[in-house]
Length: 200
Image (cartoon, rainbow, N blue to C red):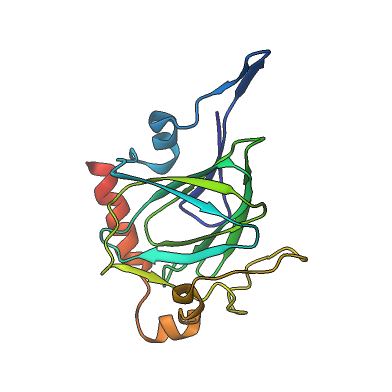
């Protein structure tokens, strides 16, 4: 298993080794000990989520208040998607930066998203199934979103895909509005939280 840091600090791409024979394929899809060597602490899986999306479905950009936030480990079980990580931590050296990884049922990569980062994905095929390991339970009072079509964020969306948004995501504020309204987590709060997690 290879773990590669993305350009947004606190996010990592994980590429598993796959072992194929005439019966099928075997792989380790998650190794908490190996991930912890890069993240600085173990991902305490509290909740798992599954979403099934049609082609063009864009989910996000979602984030949670820090503390506690919600770290995520995301992979595609079927189909394919572009997974986006957006740095929403005010004061971060990479604030506003976006990185993306193709997740599919061929390479079976995963993306780790630290607390305080924004997360979104775009399904490229009908029936795309995403699986999330989450470091905290969903808390509707602490969950927020940013407009995924905000030109200031400028997610690198592929041509030729008709985008579908939920009403909630379509009504989410721009990055500038969320910043002005102090909705976003701060780099200081996130750094403190990461340090606390590392000492657990």
